[in-house]
Length: 91
Image (cartoon, rainbow, N blue to C red; front, side, top):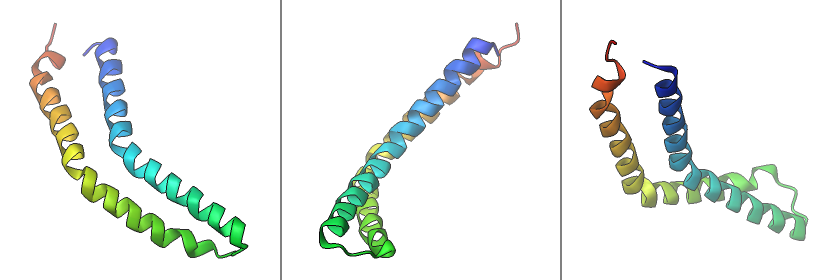
């Protein structure tokens, strides 16, 4: 395995991980900001108020995005196994 191949594989892995995590993280960020603004406007100082809306929204996004996420993971894994012979070839 060459250094270039290891770097390319690492880049693809990080890119796939970021693609899979971004819908969940972005939705949690947006809900957290909305609840924080609501707390600031109404002067409610409850630290645990953001947990339930975040859990609900992240759960909904996970249910809605799960087919796409599985497709991305499946494509990455199939590509990895298809190219495995070229990766470990002894020169």
